[in-house]
Image 1 (cartoon, one colour):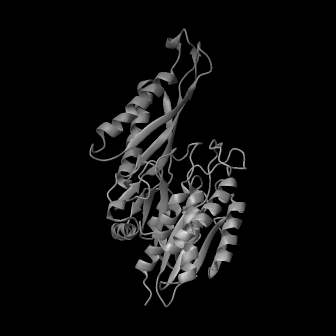
Image 2 (cartoon, rainbow, N blue to C red):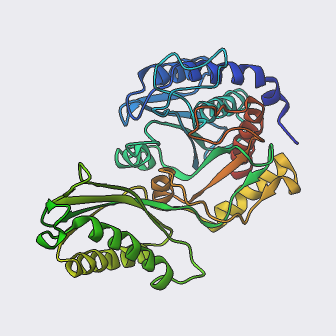
Image 3 (cartoon, one colour):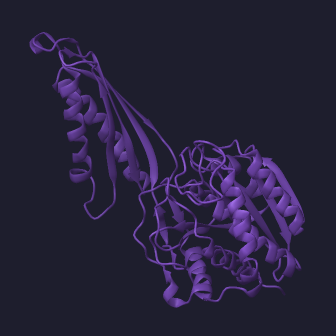
Length: 387
């Protein structure tokens, strides 16, 4: 493991920063304490410019290298989740019902560690844009930062991010060219029938059986309308209807998620869902209205940038420390918006055994922070070598 010596020395400080952030988790865009701490650290580090208030609490900080050159973007998300922590660690959340259950505190510490080294050494040309982003878990802070013009304003030419990966081998990087995470869309189906007495179903138009039929029929889109070699998920996750045992209700509601990697598949799913929902509902004598709420697009790595990031990761973790052809993950990530705006790559960094993300027992492994920070630093120095 070729961790940069200076960054290795920063390990205890990165752990302290991360654990402080862990005590003050904040949600979505409303992250004033987190943003203030990041800004305080950036000022102490001595970056050349700090631009805050982007996407409410986001920050872009600039470090200038030696000589002219392009600008490379490095992104860390910093929002938490509405989860009650159960880790029992001494630095547990002090904000009831809020928790850093996805490791964004660790992502921020890694980027601050890389920033410290890069500001001290300046062993690169051009500039580095450090992107600290709120609202990855909810709200699409990545999209908002792009909409507010960070790519053009700071002339960012390429952009990279890391996410921790519990359950994966410690210190091993995982990525792939092309889609690495899915688009996440939400569907809502409202069914209307005719309610009445449960003992006289012939006097009713039952939305309950229509709902059951719709949920079953939706699975045929995956099994019969999509290439079986491809990847698609349609999951109905909620059905709400009725109030008691002897009344057939008037209405039913179905909710769920759609995960795709391709816009053509996404469009096919929307079309077929409209047909299936309307047709099945009509077959039961009901009416149904489908609404699809489009969420984060797929996270798609540029092939050349993914190959470059893989080479840099191998310099840090060794050739056996990188898997560059992982199976795409069905989860979603709003770094997708930044990769739509600029070429780049998204990688996962194994942190060993432990509870998975979004679990009340999850905790970021501070020992991987020097590895991630070394990757960020080497990425800059390799992409933009000093003349």
